[in-house]
Length: 426
Image (cartoon, rainbow, N blue to C red; front, side, top):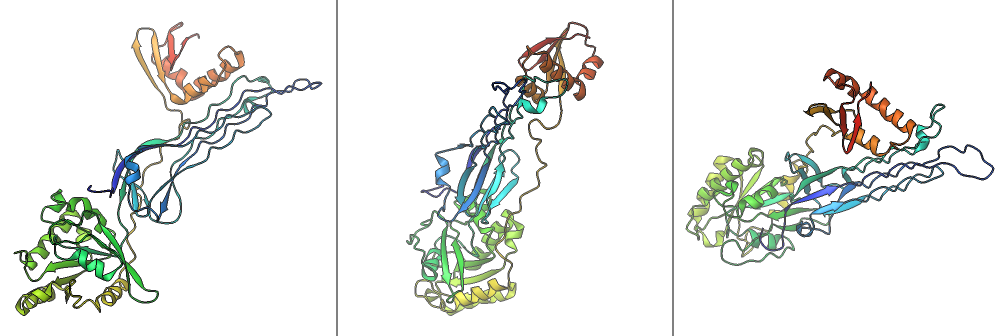
């Protein structure tokens, strides 16, 4: 994208890990058998997206691509729970879509005022106080905190506007939006002077207004990436009404009717839904056109069922009633389209479920892949009998021992679980 306007970037978001549970025992003078009192870990910080009307581009994300929330605090003695980590708030321009980089599915449309959580922080682990029982009075293990969620996402800015100005370069879109609103785009008599979409607020009455966007760079082949059109077509998708400008004078040596049909073919190729949006055909530069040229375009619009107005953005001819006409048309149309997030089956949180796989890489060696089990093992004291008893019970209840037997494990075979190795004993 040219200049400082950036409307699509790829970033990595990572929520915080939950704090580990604590292994602690009550120690107090004259108090016998105080027992375990390890507290739970705090929740990791989530990654939250918020719409910010002070932002109009994704430029800042070009220089920083990784966003990571803080981890939760570890539990303390005396059953003290660790502090929850603060959420990481990412501010983006209103109208930003967040898409999963792997699947391309829309995860969120940051257009409203409510914060959107896109990566939840991991839950804190349990302290050893939770593992005390009449038969296990001195548990020397705790539960580690769950890891946070991490993923690559695309941020794609789709400008929020009621009305989109479309048409070939140099037909007068920038001049028109500068006359109708307070927007001040760069204007000159050569192609592609507008390199970024321009938004302008058009006042109709004391309390009536609408937002118009100059969508630059549409030419034949834009839907396949020719010229600048492919970069900006996405912005037209939110517009409820399209103002289609043509140069009725033919000053560029082109046929205005052919231009109109060419742009509509590009819209159809990009999005059939977009091509079906209502359009007003504006025959611009009528001050330099002959009556026959204007009537030819008028007859074409009537035949196709389009509203038609002959205007001159440069001399302001025909512009006095145009905002009111647009406003009346908008009152008959639904609100600015919102993009609904596409359903994604919730990913299992780490530690939830007991999935595992067992491989047999070499004789008398079995490898167990089960991340949830590795976390239990990491929080256990392998030198403590009760800790190992608890760990063995997890093996049995999850079905891992039964699967090892089914695969032909024998006495003193080696069992690998992550970085740990055990001898199998009946």
